[in-house]
Length: 379
Image: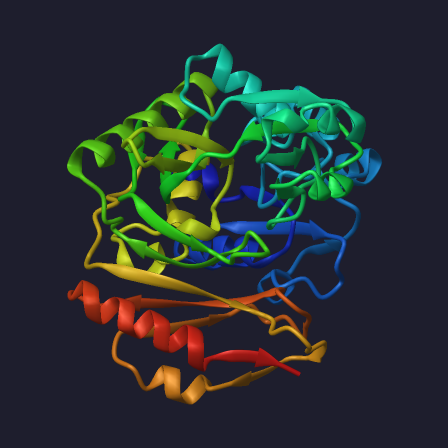
């Protein structure tokens, strides 16, 4: 570790589970962190001596909070980028860069970026309001996405019929061709300030049919070597054309014809990389820290095949969280439970995840289904 980091403070905007796991990884290097989050009981808080409850979208709050940091990073895109730009001008390092966060948190700007740089993505139209969505009814079915403030499945919906048009978003966004994809995959790619890049093995994601949240994933993805190479190539191309420093999750579709299309990206550790804590030599959290501190990027080799199951709050339950089936799941070989320390559950809230490692792909799937059907978050 460089002597530079001896009295070096890293600020994290956002205090959810991603920030919590980032801090846990940084403990291995003795790094000093502070964080800000609107929730007084944010999951990150128990791991920090210095925590500020505050609105991370508020210019003054972010600027005041960040002034004694050496470096600032984010665990969510919905932050005040103007404050981050001003802090950067004052000599504070901000990775990922504020202008990149700004671009990525707007899905319309994302799509325009892909189009301008010849990065394969689904055909789309920009829309200003509900009426402009309705005017495209002859192109049904399609996907309607809010340009801003969509997160964890919110702000994305499939419009299949003219009846569905009444639910169209009445705000700026995009209408995207509904791709009849074969698989949804994700590639994590890291880049440091020196320009070194590293990709992780491609993962295959399975989404909840209604709530657009990842239910579980498998790594490596069951895809051809050609698709594997193309997905990694595209991920590197995206981060290099962005000139971004940090970790980027690139979510993609694999079409029935074998084409790889970028869906969207996230400039931070991501749900599709939780399994790297147990399954890869370098976790996504350590890799993000290496990248933003301009250290050599770590080995991303998978130690063995893995799966990750999200623990979501069960429908019909809201209140103090209880975990049914925890001991049965923990008794399975190769299973590691991560609980995020959230006191209260509500339907589909991310309460934790479970990583499963097994050299046999079929056994891995069996265990993933066992975990999904056995471990329930109730109240």
